[in-house]
Image (cartoon, rainbow, N blue to C red; front, side):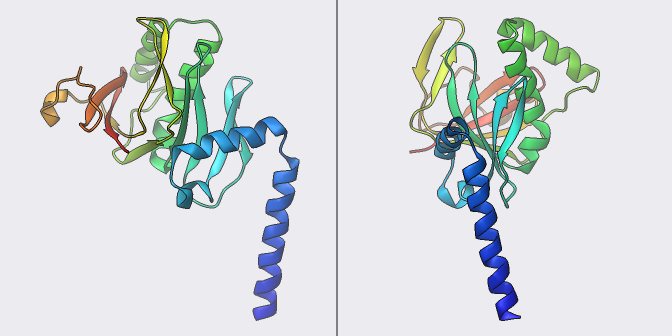
Length: 198
């Protein structure tokens, strides 16, 4: 039995090595970037996806319930992210649609209107309680549409939930202060509590 387990372990290592060799240089770089989002104990066994041809496609299959990627837009946004299973099920569909429409040339205002209508038609889910997105890279670049600029954004975690008022947490929605939580209304049908990390 011990020999069988050893053989299976070796086979697993061979398959991982073969998968790594099969990735393109671009995909390997994407894994490196996306790995900045969360602690090693998560990223070492995570699945990795890349956005191309209008959707997120798997480039490396993992063994835990986390999926890591890089959030981008045509204006230079760069935010590595690792999503847990509830976030993959309920946040990623909206993120994927949002990203695809921006690359189609739609404005953020237009896309948000479309997302609201899709939610009303049950075509997009709201977030499950417990949906978590790690975005702990020190290289985050967020895009501010109002001023058309990229800014460095602090490492943080995003706890998504169905749409809530900031009053629930006694927070001002406009609050943005590293060290304090911030309720961010990223999408019309869901909210997220942002917790800044060091």
